[in-house]
Image (cartoon, rainbow, N blue to C red):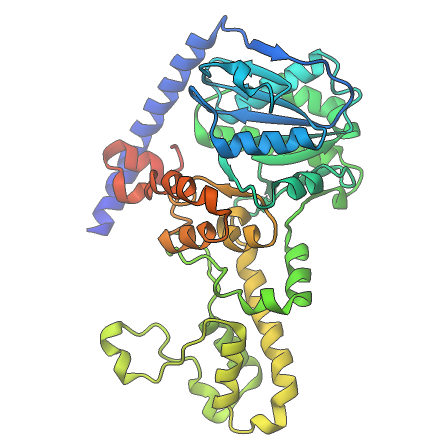
Length: 423
């Protein structure tokens, strides 16, 4: 049955691509002659800039307002570019310095293109110390937002993403990238935005937008270390090495959704690595049975471990000559846990793969398509929710659960389009 479903989706994909491409072409034709409308704009005085790409109808989400207000409180000049229309734009003068509405075509990169065009044509780029391009495809946690914005806009790294992505090829997540003045004013970046062609076809936006932008920025920076992410693997490795409390919780802070194929942290995998590298004889059976069905659970000697400390206790109780390896065993466990966690951490989109732990250590943004793309299950959503401020928990749940996993709810050409990344 699964085989025939996959075959049907593959056969329907060309039709889905043709239909979505046609829709994009129609939207492009309708956009011709539609000029961006600057609803209000305050004088610019050389501040750092936040360029926010918005998809907000009627009113702006409260978490987005909180993020822009936090930026304003830090003295950042906030520019919002919206593909939809607000009921009363003036209601948001307290959190935006400049507000622009544009025709709904081109997704987030269409709004970025409009925003950069405004910044360049009005001379803002010349004196801007650092610009943060960001969009509302993420939920903004009030818990860390001010510190997060300050860290992104320190200007010590020429191009700084919040997180990176290792799918297909290495690039920064375009939902949050900070760019310093020399890069912002580099002719290669200006040329990129002049030549960027808007489209509504998602894979094309990812290729010519997100990935091509990263390629352009890599060419501009003065050294490879000047193009990186704030929450990269090295940063997380350092935290795990130096913070025993965080290390103890890695299992609880790891993704649990099995709807995508990226590897997930497990003590079972750590057990196998330890057995293969250090143990012999009776230890050969260690870790066996962790994938046993619940119906057979009584036939296997299972051991519960919800933290590194519990896992360590289990090994101490299992090893015959524990008195001889007691001190070194703790080092082995720590090294293997960190190694396995980091191996998982680097796979795919880091914000999707690691959003639970990333929020815990200070990342203020959470991808809103986590459930829809199958990266989060309900356990992952609830784990993030319990770490949010109480007044944001209910609205976060409603947003996340309003978009169920696409493969579970979409059918026909939409299912084919979803599974190939068209929608």
